[in-house]
Length: 184
Image (cartoon, rainbow, N blue to C red; front, side, top):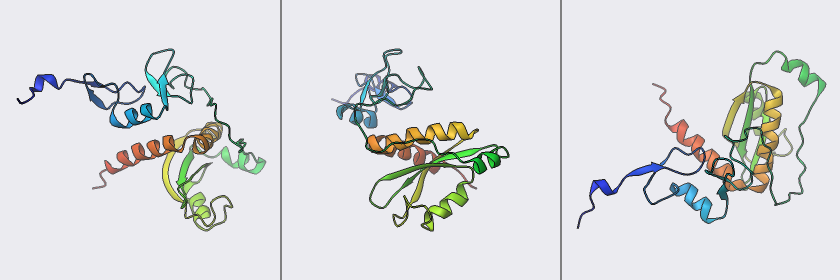
């Protein structure tokens, strides 16, 4: 017996910022279902939507929350500062936060005022943490201040250490959007 089209109603995935459609009777899209199965999702206590379990609320309910996790990392992440950089920052109107994929499958997160120059430094091996690891740009975002870039960089570095699967999801969503660009 063939299934009627009326039985294939859809609704949005329960994950807080996912717009993918799922069939009635299903809670998540495929990607978020996999994350749920792996124990990486739980419910936002404010809005009831699903969120990454490393945060206490979804970003809509508390956009400035910093990451809280039970997993520990031996790496301390702090914002970097220099007086000469701060002087040049006054002239800039945008800053870049970016993620590089490294040969061994790991990720590197950074931030800069000049992304092209910074990528050349990574490719030429003048950045010690990515030297010899064939860094490839896989994600970036522009923000309006160095302070915002520095905060986001610290959060991304923690995420690279503690939840690389979430970084891979960000990269996949970003690359899906890039594929939609029309340069004609």
